[in-house]
Structure formats: C-alpha cells, structure tokens
Amino acid sequence: MTHHPTVILGAGAAGLMAAAFAGPGTLVLDHARAPGEKIRISGGGRCNFTNLHSSPENFLSENKHFAKSALARYTQRDFIALVERHRIPYHEKTLGQLFCDTSAKDIIAMLLAEMTGAGASLRLNTTITDIAHDGRFHLTLDRGAPVTCDNLVVACGGKSIPKMGATGFGYDIARRFGHRVTETRPALVPLTFGADTLAALKPLAGTALDARVTCRDRHFDEAMLITHRGLSGPAILQISSYWQETLPITVRLVENAFDRLRQARASNGKRNLSNVLSGFLPNRLAAHWAETNDLTGNIADYSDARLGDIAHDLANWRLHPIGTEGYRTAEVTAGGVDTATLNARSMESKTVRGLYFIGEVVDVTGWLGGYNFQWAWSSGWAAGTSISDRNTLN
Image 1 (tube, rainbow, N blue to C red):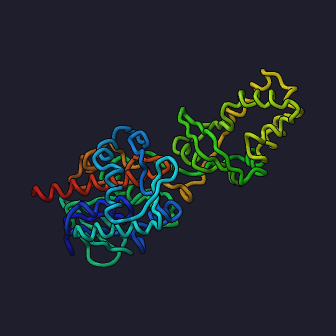
Image 2: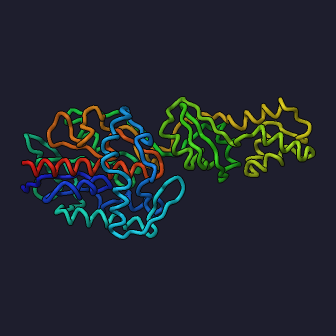
Image 3: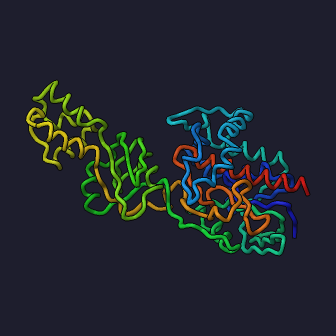
C-alpha cells in the first residue's frame, strides 16, 4: 500500500490543472491510455482553450452564483498568461474564442510540464474498483497495490463522448459519499426531430446560415446547419443546453425581414418573391420556403400586410425537437454534483473533509466557445490551491 497526500481521479483538463497546484506527492489516476484526450480532440485538434469574454453569465447551474468565486480568482487572463509563459502560439477566432495555432497537444504538454514541475505524478491504464473512507481515503485498483490519500479530487468528467471512455463514475462517487446529483443530460449537442419534420428538412441537408435561435427566453445569434438528422451548428449547440423535452425552439431566419421585403418591392417589384428570398437565404432554403408557404408571383403583388405576415414567419420559424443526438456527440454533460453540497471557494465537500469535485462532474455547464475549459482551469486551480494551502498550514 502506498500513501499520497492527494489523489486526483481523472487526467483531463480539470484534473491536470489541479495536479499542477495541489503540491508535491500528488498522484493522478486515469483509466485511459493517454492524458487529456478531450483536450486533444477539441477545437478540431487546435483546442479552444478559453474565451476572452468568460464570465459567470456564460454558465448554467441550479445555483447561478456558485461558479463566480473560482472564475473570479482564476480568470481567462491567468490561463492566457500560462499559455504565453510556455510560448504556445494562439489566435482569436470569432466571439473571443482562443485557439492554439499548431496543436491541442501543446496544451496537454504544458499541463503535464506544470504538474511534473510541481512534484505530481501520473498513472494511466488504471481503474479504481473500490473506495473506502475512515478519515483517509482507501483506493483499491485493478492493478498494483492499493493507495491511500488524505485528499481525493474527483475530476472524472461527465457522460459525454463515451467512445473516449466517459462514464458516470464521478456521480457514483458523489452519491456514495452522500452528495445529491442533479439531473444530467447531453448539452452542446445537435437536436433531432420527428419523421414529418425530418422529411421536410431532408432536401435542405447541408444548408448553413446565420440565424437567431431562441428557447425559454434565451437566444443565440450564430451559424445554424441543417443535417439529415435535424439541426446542428453553433447556434443549435448553444440552445441545446437550455432546451428540454416538449419545448419548442424558434428560429429567426432573416433579420429586419419586413423592411428588407419592402425595399425589394420598391426597387424591383417585378421580381419573383422566391428570387427575392434567395437574396436573404441560401438558395435551397429560399426555394423551399417559397414552395411550402405558397409564395408565388411578383413581390409587387404583395401588400404591406401580406409582407408583414411573411416577415413574421421568417422571424418566427417554430420547430419542435423530439430529442438530441445524445452523449455520443454531446460536447459536455449538463447537471452533475449538486453545488449546494460544495464549498464554492475550494470545491471541497461540505460534509466529507478532503473530498473535492471539479470540472464537468460538477453542476456547472459553460457555453460553447472555450467556457467549459475555463471552468476546468478555474475549478482545478481552486481545489489545487486549497489543498496546497491546507498542507502548508499543517
């Protein structure tokens, strides 16, 4: 049996970050063959590692205030400074998203260098088969001697992308130690539709456009993609975190549609309305919209009242998803370990001394665009520094 002051379960973004700050002797365990696999595949292999505009308003949780402490004390600027210290080149894309110029592997290498420099070690291909607690945590492993520790950090992630080994193990640990787990569901995920809607959308598969997508008084103005399974693209992924079964979504296909239609009528009233719409929408979608809504003839033949109706429909395309593509394609898991049972400053359990939960396993879910990585960095830092400070005092 070997003893470590701290054991971290999970060699993902949050776990590696915590290891860099928790202090010498920290051990990181993971069942995977390589560390940081979600980091490696993120951002098309370039890793959208944070967002310049990250703030508590970009996160969902039963307690909207919980993430404020960690996000305020370790900000996107702090992580950017770490990236720059390691001379990793990066660039900004849209909406404040920061990506590596070369490869996501640069971020993994940086985190491994930081944790190794801090005196932490990593053991892969290792599964925890049992956890007991008697003041210390006792971990039984599938190979090698059992391990004990004073601090146990759960950084196992959520259920998203199971082909990469994601499981609900972190939630099982939480429940075992008396913590409530809020309802979990796939988030940042494409939406699916019933047979009738899919039949109507099928000819439009591959069509992309900028749109405003709204659900439950929340809207996102980003790109939307029609697929053979339903709807995807950034605007849809964003709204999926707010969507729940039975709720409709509303898509604004054209902004200021009424004014634009009137201007088109005034400038060339002899144009066919379908051709006018193709100036606002991708050609296939314009033709489909005209056909399904029986919009024939020249635009000059349409009164202001009729153009108003058309504009309203273009701004309020109401759709009823029946589900999502599930954890298979979900970028993150919404819900998780109830934040009411955790200390917002340290991420430590309020009932079990030395037990911490960080990253995706916690009921904090960020928007698309680097926000979930920022939560991993901030929550990992909060737990790691809390452990280090305690060890220093002891």
